[in-house]
Length: 399
Image 1 (cartoon, rainbow, N blue to C red):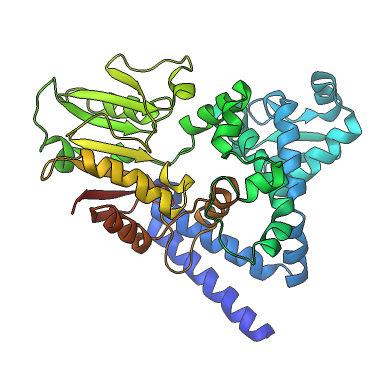
Image 2: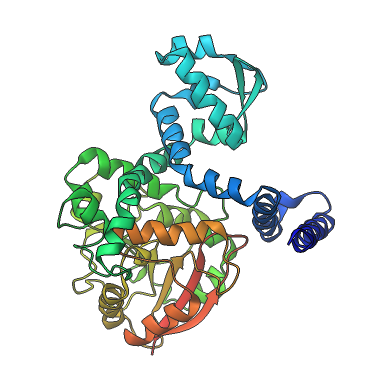
C-alpha cells in the first residue's frame, strides 16, 4: 500500500513539474495550466496527509465556513489592510469590538487555511485571499449567500435517508424546504427578504471571480455578430434571467459598435432593484416559465440559470425559448460550469452539490445538456470549453 502511494505521489510531482516547464515559471498566465496545477496539488495534498487526517479535516469543514463568515461580519479582512505589515490582535480587537482571545482562534484557523499569514503568536498579515475578501463586495456577498446552505447540509443525511437516497427533483420539496420547514422555492423564500435578495443579486455580479469573461474568449464576432441583421431596431441579445445585467454591460463594453437592441429579463423583485446599468439596456419583467415575449432575437443568453433547476423544469424553460427562436437565425448560448465525465475538478463538483441542496438543480455534463436540448426541440451545436476551470459556453440552435 505504501509503495503504491509513493508511486502516485511521484507521478503527481512529475505532472506538476511538467506544468512548471510548460509555463516557463508563469503558471498564472495560462488558465488551463493554472487550473490543472491546482487540481493536481489538491490530489497531492490528500496523498501526503494520513488518510485519517484527510477524513477528520474534511469532517470539520463547517468550522472553516463559520470562521470565514464571522470574519466577514467583523470586517476583519478590511482591518487587516494592505501590504506586508502585520497587525497585532489587540489592534484588531479594538477595531472589531471582538474579544482578542476569540480573534486569535479565528485568525489561527484562517492562517492554517492559507487565508492570512501569522507572523508571531499575536500578529497576522494579509494574503492575496485577504485582498479579495477586503475589496470584492460580490465575493463577500457570496460567502453570506452560501451560508444559507450550512443548516441544509446538517440535515442532508436525515433527508436522504427518508427519500431513499434519490436525487431531489421537486423544487418545492427538496433539501432546502426540509431544512427550513417551508414549501416554497429558495428564490421565493429569499424574495421575501430585501436583504437576502440584495445579497444574492450582488453575488451574481461577481460569481465569475477573476476568471476570464466569456466575451473575451468566445468568438462573439464570428459566431454571433457577423450573422445578425445589423439593424438598430432588431433585438441583438436577450439576457434571460440576467440579474443586474452584468453580462450585458460587459458585452456592450466589449462590442460597443454592434448594432441592435439589448434586453434584460428577470423577475420584478430583481428588475425593481435600483442599480446602474448601461442606458442601451431595456429592462423587462419576465418569468422564464412563461411565453418568451421577445420573438426572433439574434441571440438568447442564459448564464448560471439552468443549473438552478432539475431536468424537467429545464426542459420547460428551454421550450419557451425554442418557440421564440427564428429558424436559421436565432442562437441560444448557455453559460454553465460543465462537469467533466472523468476526474472532475473540485469547484464544479461542489457547485453541483450546492445546486442540489438549494434548488434541486445540478451541474451537468455535455452529454446531459445535449439530451435536455433534444427534449426541448433544440440541438447542441458545440460546447466551447473555457480557459481553466470557469464557465463554458453551450451553443444551441433550433433542431
